[in-house]
Amino acid sequence: MTITKSPSYKTNNNNNNSNGRPSYFSTTSHPFRVWDIFKRVNFGTYNVLSNVGNVSPSLPVPSTVCCPPHATTGQPPSPADLPPSPEVKEERQIEAMRNVCLLAAQIQALVARNIKVGMTTDEIDVLVHEAAVDRRCYPSPLNYMGFPKSVCTSVNNVACHGIPDDRPLLDGDIVSVDVTVYYEGYHGDCCVTYMLGDVDTAGQHLVQAALRCRDEAIAMCGPGVPFAAIGFKVEEVAEEEGVSVVPCFSGHGIGEYFHGPPDIYHCYNDYPGTMEEGMTFTIEPVISQGRGEVVILEDGWTAMTLDNGRAAQFEHTSIDQSRKKEKYGKIRPKGQIGLPTNFIDFARLCSEVIMKTHHIGTSSLAGILTTFVITVSGRW
Image 1: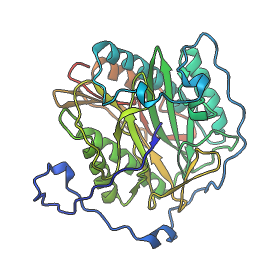
Image 2: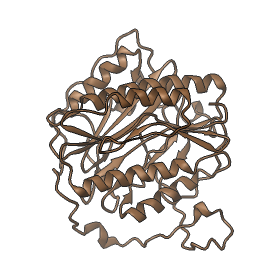
Image 3: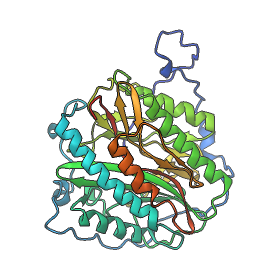
Image 4: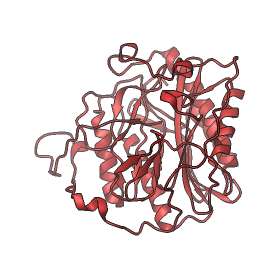
């Protein structure tokens, strides 16, 4: 689940890198033009959402499930209760993150097995909620700053934070399903974009571009790499693909807290600090067909693109072992499974969970990411 931030932009138009900065800060940026906001572009054939549907009441959580403080208060931790800087986790904490991420992977796999045309996003919420509590997990979005549901479902031109409702999914929809669970004191966060039925060429391109933005950002992570470099890489890939980053939503540190330091901007930025072994944080760029501006609806959550272009979002976990990234399995739109050869046990287990669920009837899986946070670690 992303957080809303106002990034401090940093651009560098010199691809020759004459200022001595590392190559991952070299960019070619395009000037912002006010009238571009109002340009009407043919983004393809799909159903444009203009409002939310009917939202059913929140589902109850059994007393046997361990809940985070916001389950009752509705409020995130105060800044005083968060680490003052990006946390370097100990081995026991890494193990806890492994456990909660595996559970979230199982729930996302269940979504992959069941999502289909005609299903409502409220039914996805019920599926995720019941799967979470059955595993003694609390669905982290529930009552987080008042969010009324257990999962975020964002369809077509909804960029993120969509509230599940009674609208049936249509043939040709793309939908991002953002699952986060809390287990034994730790959060695990993941998001997947699915293509349902016959998605047009423009929609398929968007999904593949979003996937590439995430993959290439992860590939550059490792100890000593600046956090800001992630945004430069995402912007670079987005420009090559002819799509845009939605800059106001960022990744975040995660662990015993849902959202904490560092802030991970997916756009050009000058956020300070570098990655270290044992840090965990999410990389989750929201990528749109149009300019990337959004409007928040009256519910305070649903973010819709201003130009009605579609958006796609992905999260993934990379494990840095002496600068060699271990990537978890993912399923491509046509069911082709791209798997690295050097899997660690956890990654292999997650992959097997997903591989068993990629045939999902009339739906086609746009890209499933079995994991949820970046772990910069030589231990895990």
